[in-house]
Length: 485
Image (tube, rainbow, N blue to C red):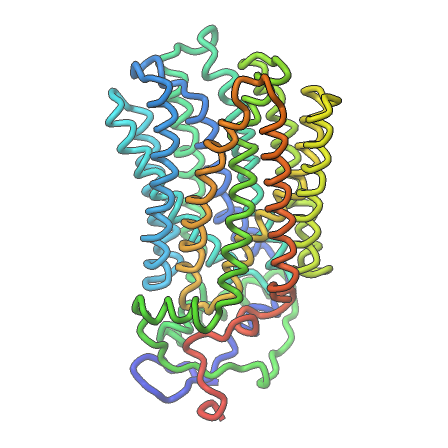
């Protein structure tokens, strides 16, 4: 095995880096990856809850529409950040980006807590969104490339599901921060904006010790550095008393200089080389985003208009909903590595849709109350949450390594755009609560969309469980067989 750089030469260089990474047992190093990188979704869930409560409305003299627009501006920032930083994470590396994007979020969220006017708040909510959007691309890429193949599915799904842990932290904090009897109305929401940066400061310290992805280094002309990085990881594993087996030479991969990835090349890979996989990623991301936004952003209105629950009391019903969403990925995630991707995606998407359809029929019949309807939501989204997390896993593992960040960013942007229409559509269907028919139709449509997404995954999906990323999709820098020989 040679440690020479592959850059600037057409001569293939042989590497065992991917096989060495995939044969590692689970160790403290992998826990550091999960803790150091997985916080991104916790921060996002926290941010959404803090902002959605609108505690700044009174202090900044905002209208209801301006409060709603604040959330939209944050989501737009996420899309722009994902698209911009997605390309950068493929170009300059995972580590630089997951340090930079977290730093952007820390600064912007902290400054938003110091807002003295609406325009100041909006500027820094947009910038905070940029940071979190960039996190999605850099973190998913790094996790998939650093975690051994037999654990990749459960880890990625569990980490994505921790969004709901952050949402629960935010909702719990709001109970005190937005209570004027506990904290002044002018300060409670500001403290809420500081919670994320305080957590982030701890995490950014941990991230300093996480290495660059050896797979990224290997495919970007830095093979010697990639092998040194794996040497250091293996040395740490051996210090834990683990004996590592030798990797057979048959698992080596030949690397040449990757082609320049202009827009035409990238679009050709998505639309010509992998059209079926692109359709799979598009359908999975759009279907889960539509259902989540439709239910999550309107469940409070349903409770108020149809079950006459006060606005203040709707938050009580949020916690079991969030618990179901958090537990789904944690409990079901391992089965994506054992039972398999296609079977589990079909099962989670399909069962979520069926439960939602049953609840729609019972809702129309008038046999549900606020508690029983919430129970149905909890069961449906226990499965939907695991399915939604698997959508991010899917788009990050089925395309070549050199454009993994861009793949995540493009599908994330499309799903956000599609999902953004759902709250408006379901808001119209809810109306003033005098008729259940329109919303029932909406629920059936949402259920059908999820079931369709599961069926598409069954027919178009990839059996990526237990496989090396390089076996799921050949790197663009992999030498052709004839040349490698």
